Length: 296
Image 1: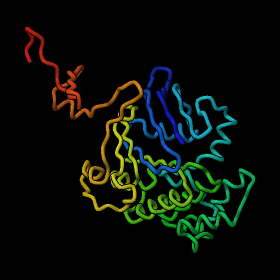
Image 2: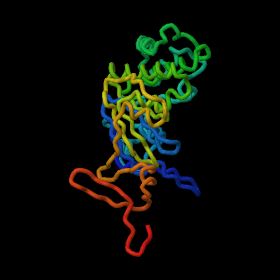
Image 3: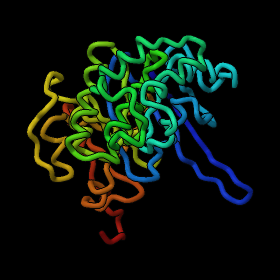
Image 4: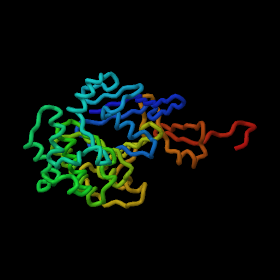
């Protein structure tokens, strides 16, 4: 469904150049439900904006289904955003029109596409648990209910892929669980590909695969040991949460490059270069021995 290779994004101003993505590689299978995690400034939101057709890459390859987003025209991107991808923001104001009812909000993207279907709009609101609230104005809905309306809106034009930027960032834990259950249902019953950007490891523990981004590159993947396990009881300490449910892998790109976590390198005293050893079964990495005449 998604294939990114050597993806680069550079933001330029008159006197400043910021490289947000530095050759990122990522593949997402059709029907997969996965999360992207990373610190602020890691490039995860930039990636999501490119996948959503909201921003253009500077170089590399980025394909979603049959769409080549590097070569797409503005007209292509309009059709792509209408028919292929649904988007959910953390900030409800970017999803919703406050002077309309929940039902009218869901119907709005249908109107832009010229295919209003009130029965389907009602069905979407029933699916997200708002059957009895669909005629309420947004001011009459809680924050969690508004976010569920936003999910229904994102599916109004029956997209193949759903992108969610911190979808549970502004709701409580109970509402967060409800939203994740909705995502899982759509993923399983509709075969919807779902990509979630988050910094919340408890949320990341509820998807099948987690990709960590560091400095504009994919660095680590966490793959669920048991794909049927949704509600694992896991410790809440950061770092142990994914470890209980997922197997961790370092990502190796097509050129054999990988990102070793900085804390590992620092503990070994490795800075600009390292020594490799191969014993026929495994590869060892250590700090290089000092040359003759040098001090360790």
